[in-house]
Length: 499
Ligand code: NAD
Image (tube, rainbow, N blue to C red):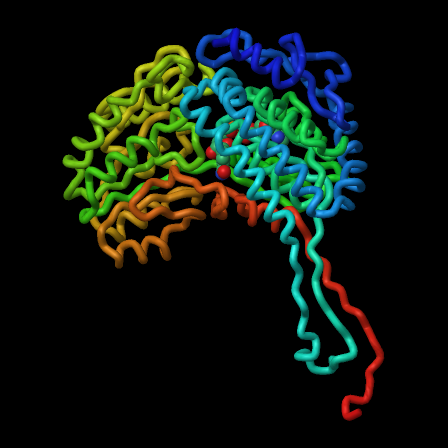
């Protein structure tokens, strides 16, 4: 499969070597000091490719290019932007099978999951292209303001912000890159993208689609390398007008502290709750949670992590969930039948195993799973979890659910709200009153009734409350956040209203 992968990367990028360059000012370039990072499969450790390890000088060149690129792109009419983005979407559709193989190789998720992810690329670009062409303003009824008559006209215009810095995480290397760059470009902004260090090859393959579609030079730039080294220069540069970051809450806080006066979107971590009420359909809840807790090896910000089950149905629920979790086939991302691959690296698998062991040593019960083999963790169920323990309070980002019990629905909502986070929540109940109470009282940016939070339609507003972030993604929301409103007032001379 790696032989095929290499061939497909070369076909995509038209090159005949295993190393890849980054995109600055329309050219594919190495790092200014020629340093490279090796990208290895987290499952097999095989070399997947190399990318430049960008320097601070490269970041400066990329921001300069984006600054110039913005002058061209912001003066490109929306219908031309739509045409280029739709061409990029068609290429992303065509190349989805190759991009899926790149995702599975560098990220370690199963090929089937990678195909699902890559298959959404074209639609995200098309949805964004449309929203970016809808930059409407408002007419202001100035005459309603005492002292103002009909001699003035006021309205708003919506314009792109300028240079957008997009910083993305490893867990959805195509999806989360596209949720930033597609709306940014659609609205007329230029972009400097810094993909996760572990998964830059997917980002480069996606960038290639935009280049091949005819995006002018400098409009999209991709710098690869270490976030900790490049991040400060990217987020504090005064030529950058907007930062769109998805990643951990710790790095998000750091960015917020150093960004200065800029627009910020922060999509951060979570410890997602799912309530299973006494009146829930236990079988349906178990089916959904056996997906929502384990997809992408649990490395999803909207993973179902904390399961809060009414004490009256706890045993029945665990009995329904266990065989479904034990049926999840984990392992080699490219093997037939693998549903869930490995974690992003061995160290992360060590961390997750230790978190499970720590919970057990504090009195929780491991019902199934938790065994480690390299970067793979067997899907786990832990019961009797103290809602205040770290397995509940901290983001696990691994393939396990932590089950606690509630005394009643109000108590369940209290527990759901008892962490610093608030990104996604799920509620299983057959009672309309419970559903409405949950919608109103759960502190979460997205709430699903009768499904877990691990579900996303790309067009919907998506983002967290509390320590889970600021702002919303989804093409319409992102275009709004990547544009600014100017208020315009035209002053005429008063005329005689009786004539
Ligand atoms: P991370 O925070 O370690 O890294 C994210 C990105 O930030 C990477 O590109 C990294 O290189 C860069 N970075 C690192 N240090 C930086 C710094 N000082 N300044 C600027 N950039 C820096 O996150 P990760 O491990 O790649 O991803 C997992 C995290 O992302 C989890 O916490 C998860 O919940 C979160 N996430 C959130 C969402 C959401 O929509 N809310 C979606 C996916 C992932």
